[in-house]
Length: 379
Image (cartoon, rainbow, N blue to C red):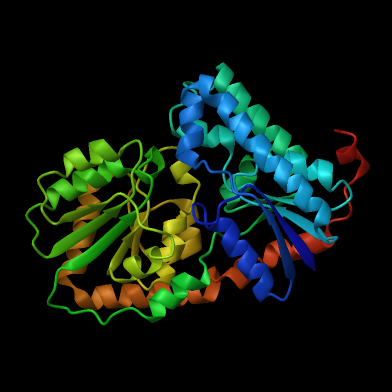
């Protein structure tokens, strides 16, 4: 097949679409990119929702990107399917107008309503902001012929008509993460256990509990932790862990350097939040950490259990003491650590490589007919 990867996606900020493009090419498909990245990350978009008077800036930025996208789309070769990248809630509307008779595949990794609720932007869910987020989601889903989600839970959460067009594809990890895993330095068992967390410090990540765990580990000289990223719960997490001298804080690391940094560590942390959203996802960092050859420690939720099986180490969501106990056991039992690392890497190689995660998308897109009349009548 020939694919057109379309939208304002930013592979450096959100690697998911890069994994899909890599996987399609590895599977033998041709992928032509029509991409004008929107210079605004998820945190920036959330900030605009908190301060609605800044929305005209978003409209102006999006309009500029769309103008360039429309020009480049006209020059692009005909495609068998169009892939609209992650955070494509608005881009898919433009794609539907430009490619009326070509199947549109929307990577609906997160819903606008779910993200807004997780970040406490919509109160109880019945206000104007909540209705706006649901309207954004519904409009995006109506424009897509195939809706891609990452877990069975997210598929079940789709409206019935969209679920009928849905397909589940794991987030996966790009080739650079597997390369970093293959180049991992030989661990010195006499040094402290090296633990890494990478994230945006949102309620989903549960860094409130992670900060508590770091505080409890203040007296453990054999455990060193690297915390990468910043976000809404960063200050509280850092304040809670202030007495632990073996925590290194990095505001961020360039995407090109991140795989090697993670691979220098023994353990990669997943998520520990107790929000509804946290119960339904398998975070990108889990796939990447496993591909990099780290032991993975994350919360014991249904989608993570299903995806990772017995090849990760689980603790109850929101349980700082259980996380502390798990890290101490890995620090004291290096055989358990080595076994956990091996199992995580083996599962990643078998199930999380880009060419593997795109298989259900390719199969579904190949079966998708040209845009049905009902979809065209929306415009």
